[in-house]
Length: 183
Image (cartoon, rainbow, N blue to C red; front, top):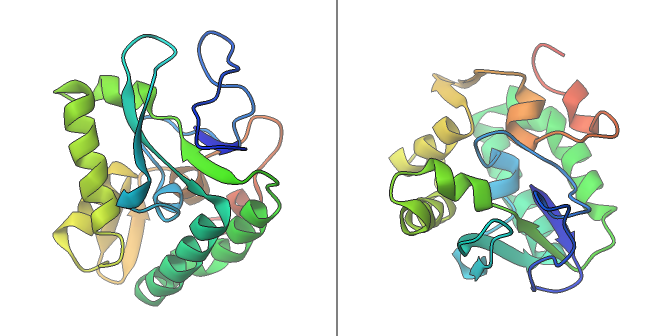
């Protein structure tokens, strides 16, 4: 889940399963646009709702937006048909958020990785470390975990591009769910 917070502290309110007030959700991965927000300086350990502590990222919203804008500009040069159309709605959505920090609630992801949180933390560090080098093998690993696969100058999703790259909302369709190929 992508969260908006007033501090770097873990969210205290939850329904026994998930934190309240999540901006977006995703299934079994961290969408590429979420990763575009963060770097390794934001790695922290938070207590889990279901027990064990887990590694996640939390950073100031303004820094996240600037970082994402720069990365999307670079990625749009590599894959314009994927990132060009959804960059503006994504950045507008984040700019409207009124909280000081953004974070990813990654508790369930740690359960999906062999080796638990230690292995998850290592994977997340690798993902965040290679986002500024779209030609690298590490960046291609990030795309794969987001269910996107390079095919020459195109990215092929295994699902709807908007859902895979940016996540989804419960209450209404997110603005980027209408952007991108096949929309």
